[in-house]
Image (tube, rainbow, N blue to C red; front, side, top):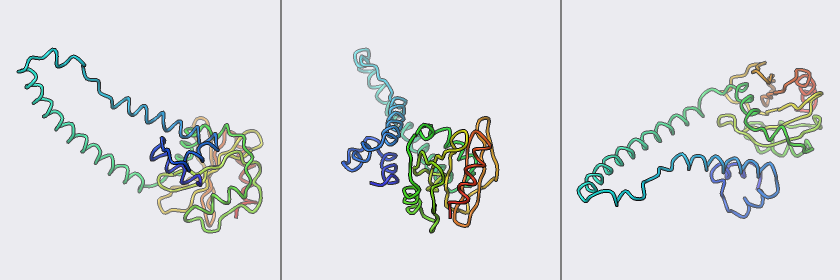
Length: 234
């Protein structure tokens, strides 16, 4: 199973027992950590939705009170179901509109770096051919690829930029690591050449076939990796 299919199935059901899914899970510590995070999130959601009911409720009420409570609960349940349906509808519409709205690459890149902390701790050594295999599966990139090794690649995976399937890399800089996102061109994209927050700074490069978004702690790391990519990415 390729990584994109694995992540889609993990998002849909992190407890998936499909043999192919489990085999892919067992082969990668990064995938195991990713699925563990999704399971933990599911647990928190289930806990938040669990409404405790007093076990001795029936023992404390008389028949008349039970009937009254029963009718009240029926009314309340109907209201809650209607409210839940309304909330679900609004949430669904909002999510659809959000995924169709403008995409600020700089802000999304910073959010990805902060959220996917496992990427910065990876110590793999990935070939540019393996990265090219992922690039080939993305829609809209055409023949964009690396023609040589852009320095050491510690991490490579698929990611989602508000509905735009992209590639998330972590490369070696002069002092630290540099996160590189390769994003297919899209009319919704908002691209700032430079951006930053309190910890990271980033730069964006537009080529004929893709947007390249770089994020790092140190400016010299950005400069070094940017030069590597300019020479190796076509």
